[in-house]
Image (cartoon, rainbow, N blue to C red; front, top):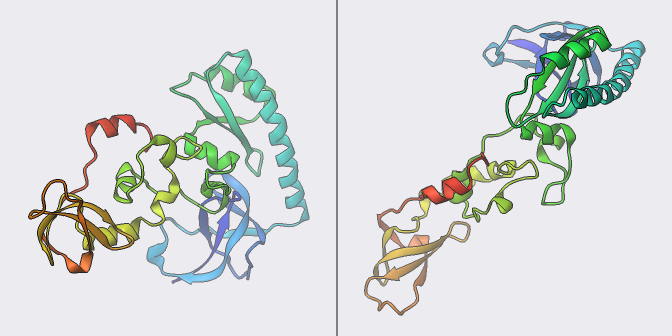
Length: 288
């Protein structure tokens, strides 16, 4: 067992564990710790707690110190430097005529490195830009290409629901989402309706997926053959939430509308399956 604190370095970022030594810390306290990038100042997201050693994916590093007034002042100064560095880098990108979009700039706490985050459609040869920036800032420069999801997380904004982006407000890490989830949840496969502002599938598809997966185990799918109180038939529609099926009875003429039964009233003979055809895959290519 190990006593740890969870530290977050960005407002909505991943939480990393550190050894608090003999310090008792509360959520919201600022601390200085050593990371792979050097010294960093972060916020305590998880107060002292004990976890099993098997939960640690990496060797536990100790707390360096609780942040004092000078550390917080230095952190604020770095924020101002980042704004100035952003303007300079944007101008340098224009001077080098590079097809890339600068998203964010980040100084490491010890000022040993400046990270420039950007997006681009393909690979960008930015070697000349790095040399140019290094001559201006006189420190290590790292240009890091990120995806559109990361860009949305950094910049923030409002989703189609009218609320702040999930990724920028509470999601520490992105959750895997797929076209299959949208299909299983009975959503329209129109890219406009299932993609977020970033142009990728909405993260919220994941929130209710476990419930839909469980319901799909109990509910015959469209195309299934079932026995009903009125005879055998083909499932032409289903409502997972309501637990109802629309069944085209074998004994009914073609012009008679399907009848509605509850899932409990029907006995499965042969289940159907959810299929995404090639045309749908082509139209939704790039959303995942």
